View 1 (cartoon, rainbow over the protein chains, first blue to last red):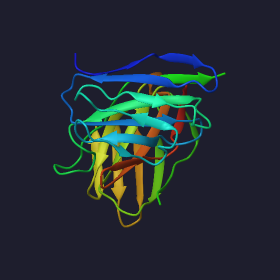
View 2 (view 1 turned 60 degrees about the vertical axis):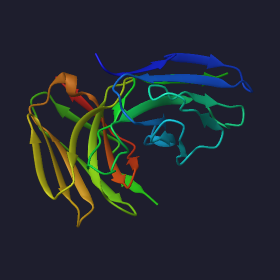
View 3 (view 1 turned 135 degrees about the horizontal axis):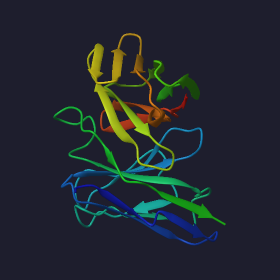
Length: 118
Length: 108
């Protein structure tokens, strides 16, 4: 079955440590995204990537970094510079960028990674 | 900026109908999505509207009025499994901006 796999599902880290969240998709989608979800707030876009070796900052990129070396993979690193990293992180992909040529490109989401910084 | 508003919570009885409203003020508009998200799980796609009017998919329907910046998701014949959060999201160019979500609780 095609889908998006995020790992780990739960992660605990101490303050000051960098953490990398994995996101792998086998849907052959070009576009991939990272969102952060906090209670009482909508999903907020951290980074997105339209194609391999290219990515763009979203609304809340500070303290995060990404890479897109392979089409299937879009890992997110939460660095020590992120002031409030405890959150639920969702990775998503779509055939091409949402709202791009071709109309609606439905995002498929992974099951999420819950990061708690102690 | 983007402003997408939804009610925080709604409660309804099994078998009833619930309407979740979403109003938006965005710098551009290329379409509106509704997603369902059960607690701790991935959001799943429910519907997409780009033109004014009603889109029906089984027990779920979604309506859009672009001139009013307004959409609603209608859930009919509610089932216990419909207890979830419902997310309204607006496409503006490449970006999908989400509302905070409406938590629907279905009671027996």
